[in-house]
Length: 225
Ligand code: C5P
Image (cartoon, rainbow, N blue to C red; front, side, top):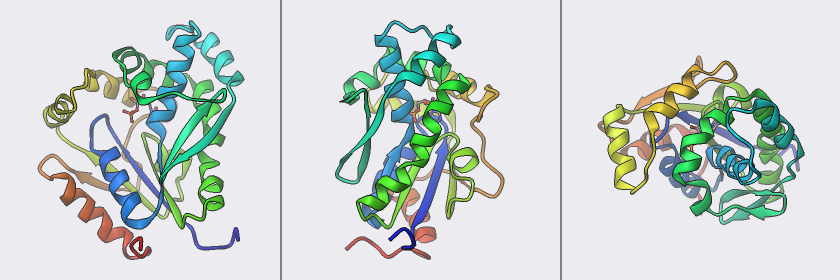
């Protein structure tokens, strides 16, 4: 069974670049497991903040992130992280406190290490549930997690357009500051990896972005029945 064809799709990009909506739509269209690694970093950040760990304490972050127990639950085609036996709801991982802290936590190499095997292990989760592939979104998927993915995309859009999209979602989020931190960190910085397909979505709506990426995926994957 492990020899069955399996397709890996990596989508990276900055905050509010359209990765999540695009990945969700592609996961439905091609029956792929959808793995939003931003939600993993958010879940870990929310859990550590709850335990009283501070963003300016890399040693505390390293210790605490080595101790968490991580499992995966599925909700439809979406992979949800369980941390110490609990799924932390969206309402707790998309708060302004998590928005303000997550990039600081994500810059700590030990925290990224704690997530590395878990993220790669999503392939086994997808196979065990008979998905023909997975689509994973984040900042370092095409560069670090799956540099050999079958498809690697990098989405970007003008900062003003991204701020408009976040505001339309009613979220308070300092996307420019998060991008600055994510681009400038030493470990796995946000950047378009060599060889990835770079897409500027500033003047495209969601359907157009999905159509563009679908044309690539359709060369290898049949649409979901
Ligand atoms: O995708 P989202 O904006 O929810 O990600 C939240 C934060 O998690 C990012 O700003 C980044 O600091 C971190 N992240 C990361 N690497 C990933 C995914 C997210 O560092 N692969």
